[in-house]
Length: 100
Image (cartoon, rainbow, N blue to C red; front, top):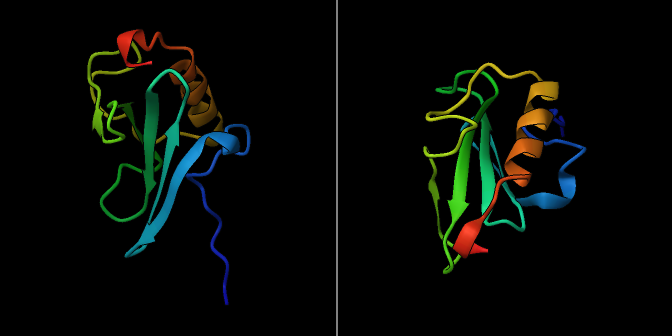
């Protein structure tokens, strides 16, 4: 079995990984922080390289992409692993408000 490096997994934020999935060559990892924010990170066909979307978890456990943070109003693509770690840290530091 050939192991493919999972570029979407941050070693620094490994303990916050909620879901890992590989589908049709697309790597996907979802991070969940205690402030009700998280990130959906993908890499593979159809993505802009290593790509991150800020997400917000709802009280029922579902989530939506959140375009209202000061981090981005869209997805962020073509990231390096260091830039991914930086963005995950910024997401972790967001004020979760009444969703926490």
